Image (cartoon, rainbow, N blue to C red):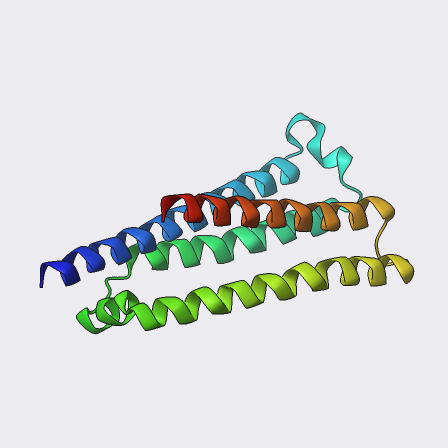
Length: 151
């Protein structure tokens, strides 16, 4: 019985952490949208199409803020806590995450190359996309190493 309560506490804590991170990124996007909209420090001069950037960051901010607030306000039911604490569901989630990341690792460079080939993205944009993929893959390897060390 005690084990279920501690598992539920861990699940709630993870949900709160996810909500806080989502909310933080939403606030950062909102600040960037405001900085671009009001041309703080000449930031808008660095962006070729300011209106698209402002609406893009504002839209991302709105979505992330709504999702972050919803995650923080959500009170899981006892059934949800049991389901989230179930080892089988954790394993399924971990496998799905791994497969999604592997797909991401394959698709990002291919999409970047395709967009570059059809002149829809600049060389810098393509290299940024590939750089993001490389950083995500290095983080993946570091997390695997940390988890293996802790087991």
